[in-house]
Length: 464
Image 1 (cartoon, one colour):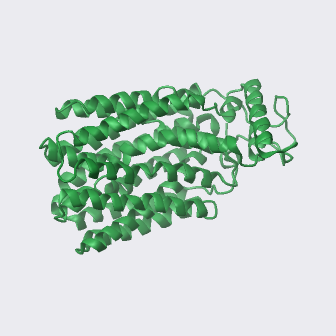
Image 2 (image 1 turned 60 degrees about the horizontal axis):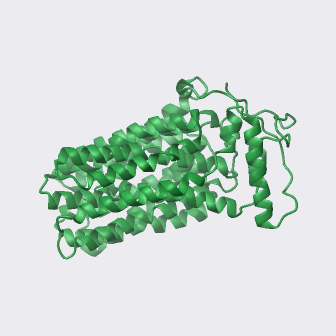
Image 3 (image 1 turned 135 degrees about the vertical axis):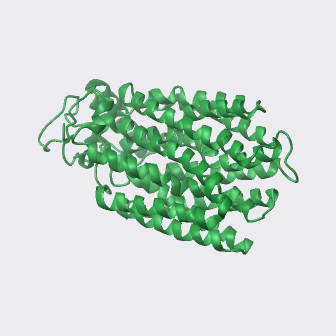
């Protein structure tokens, strides 16, 4: 199956005669969309607490439990990212097979329990085990949230809505850094890192309960041939939008798209019509993690390497991580005005330049400013890539493909974080960023040569 769309005069089963894509694309933004964004964002926020906070947790665990940098690294970020690898593959397939909502039934429950239990441990192996379990729980968050969001919003502002999700979620970075600073000031106590784990676990369980109200994706219903459910859900959404916007009628449907139903099969992502995109995204995700997490996860460690004390490192990390939020806010206003693949390329190169300057500058104030600008650019890069990842695959395997390619980044993150910490960092920050530049060159070449254009298009059109 090489196409997901047919000419506009085709009609699909259902009360309106129009496809879900047609009906979703014409909807004006309303309270329904806002509430949907908040519910999916809440889980993304919880995951981001650990995703971007594992660096400060690592620093505290090493200090409090007297673990070596290598032991602390595999006990916290490595085990978490390996768990996410397993969770991403499984959750992505489940979301295509059983529905997007099914993943939300269990993911944050597993994460919450894993983080809380990890906080009670003192043995490195047991900490790693429960952090790994927590990682499995939220492994599907990124790919399924990306898939969900891409399917619920029209092409004209899909990037902006995705960026909004991650703008709110990234507030987790300065918050977890601030909490780490509070619990470790003036000195890190024995429970400082445990408080962070328990907080993340508790928030995960709270959001898990809230998100039971998230609706299924009508695009998924239609892609699996469940036309009656798709039509009924779309009618509910349309009635709600009209009520909230005070409309008697919705804008007319401009054209008709028909989605041929298909059963989700994992092998489809390597079928002839998708193989090129899957390989392109696998290469991209494997190496982009070295760019993003090579700096993000180890920023506190980089500061310690420069001779800055632990307390000041945590304070400066809070400032540096604030760049994620500011960069994400800026991306909301530009992400739909810039071709997605060009945005990825430009932000990757810019982050590399800023990160290299961060490595070579000695003045502490300038280092903090450069760190802030690096995270500012990296989160713009992240918003571009998350939107792009969900757009380039058809609905029938969107979550499976997104979960698979994202899972590769979890493996490479674990691998690169460990390699940087144990091999390159002992030789200084400049060699470390030299390695990151290798990743940048590969990512830029991959997207520039093989990446399709996606901005302002329906996901069904991109699937062609």
